[in-house]
Every structure is written in C-alpha cells, then in structure tokens.
Length: 182
Ligand code: SF4
Image 1 (cartoon, rainbow, N blue to C red):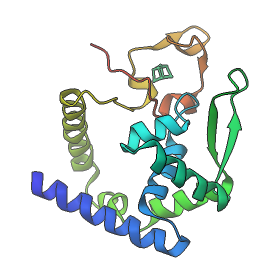
Image 2 (image 1 turned 60 degrees about the vertical axis):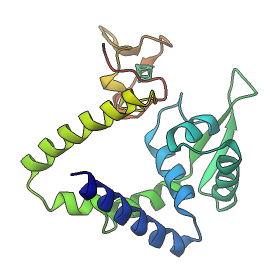
Image 3 (image 1 turned 90 degrees about the horizontal axis):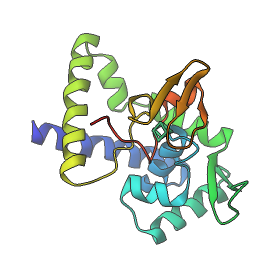
C-alpha cells in the first residue's frame, strides 16, 4: 500500500510539474494557488500557506510574489488588523486551478473507477491522513463541516470559535483552525 501511495504521489507531482511548465510556474506555486482556492477566510494568509504546504516563510513569500506578478492572486489588507494580509485567487487564478483539476491527473483516474470503491478508498485514506497528522502533531486543515467548533443553530451554521455565520460554501472549505471532534 505504501509504495502505491508513493508512486501515485510521485506521478501526481510529475503531472503538476508538467502543467506548471506551460504557465511558467513551479509546482510549489501551483500548490499554493490550489490551496488558496480551497481554504476559508481564516486560512488565506501567507502563514497558513506555509503551514499547509510545510514551507519556509521565504519560499512562501517568493511563490506568492510570482503568483501576484502573473495576476493569479491579489493581496488585501485585513479590515480590522492592518498587519494581516489575505490572499485571493483572481478569476484567472481560479481558471488555472480548474484546468489543473480537469487535467489527466489523479482526479480523472479516480473518476473512471467505480464510485463505491472510490468512496471506500476515500474513507480509508482520510483515516490514514488523520492518523498521520495526529502522530506528527500537524494541523488537520479539513473541511469546516467536520470541525468540532462547527455549530448548527436555528439561523444556520455558525463557527463556535469566531461566532461568525458560515455559508453553505464556507462549510465545504478547509480551515487552519479545524479540529476533529474528540
Ligand atoms: S467551525 Fe472550525 S473549521 Fe469552521 S471556521 Fe470555525 S474553526 Fe474553522
């Protein structure tokens, strides 16, 4: 199992590298952009990008500069805390990630497999991922609706940490503050 996962990860990395060459982007820059299309408003900071990808501050900063220069990303100051920067993919950046997802990568291969098997496999892999994150004391960065702070209230979903309302889209996004229920 371990060697299969390694080979899949290697192949996926090769495909990302080949895709990036077409746009003059390094794999790390594509991975940062992809993360920013999937994370919520609490997690779209340079620090969170570094935590998610396991990168140093310097590498993150260089990657974000390239993405900004290519108009794939824009920076905005936080409305309350002017020291904080939020990173938002532009329509061009989102389109690039959509193209990547549609390319002949792991997603396409999984879609050609029977859905029942894919669901079972996703369950097993999610549990392995969770176990590895726990063992290594890493943040989970999972979907908001699976978080222990996610609350269902009469007026809709609310984040129990920030007490802010969560839209249906927010519920699907990944978050750096996410924690699984005990
Ligand atoms: S409920 Fe959890 S995952 Fe969702 S926004 Fe709040 S802390 Fe993040």
